Image (cartoon, rainbow, N blue to C red; front, side, top):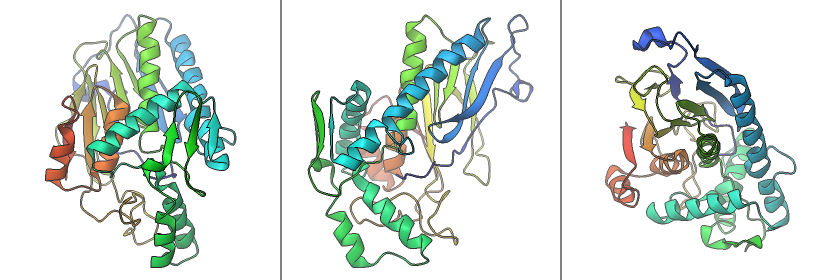
Length: 309
């Protein structure tokens, strides 16, 4: 995981319907908002007479959730927790996300661990100065990590060790997509594609079928577009962003060694009913062998690997 805005490796073809063979509904044109959300390129795509109003409601919800999860929002709940080591009366969404983090942490043998933030900062600052962090610096920083050091309930969140800090960048973009979709579904809406850095489809394409999504590892397209209907997909390319100019030091940190992920996979893509689940699993799978991934997936039977290579 990383505090950088992770580069996205999905190209949505909703705006190029002719290329997919899916005609738009002539009576209600397809509407797409494009911008930035959760630090990533984002979009909301739908065909509805009140599309702009619906998008405005979705963007307001995204902004509200960024004030919970963002590391770049000066007074977000997460920033205050990292600064003070405790957060009183935490937002429900933060607790819900922590519960998901705990499930994925357990299923992946600890490979998904939001407490890597001090390690990420160490590597980022060291490489910015032109050097790799020393073995001692990594060992000292590892002592300030560990999901077992995060305690939380409805009253407060507590970090057990001085200097601990969390990053939810390996899950929050997907989690926010889920919350937006749930809000829109509760309002009786359907056939909307929400992209907050990870994709979550509410229903399918307004013209029929699913939303077509093409995967890319940043250098090449992956054959065979996938189709999303009431489903999410999340992707991670471990070496798509690196600490060093040579592209060797991945931005994904192994929480067991404190070092960047090895060059095992170019692209990991996971589909699941919830984007938060797909996001967190994809982050962890960057660090895991294929047999370990299959074992972890047993805890999430509705999730599946879309691409691993």
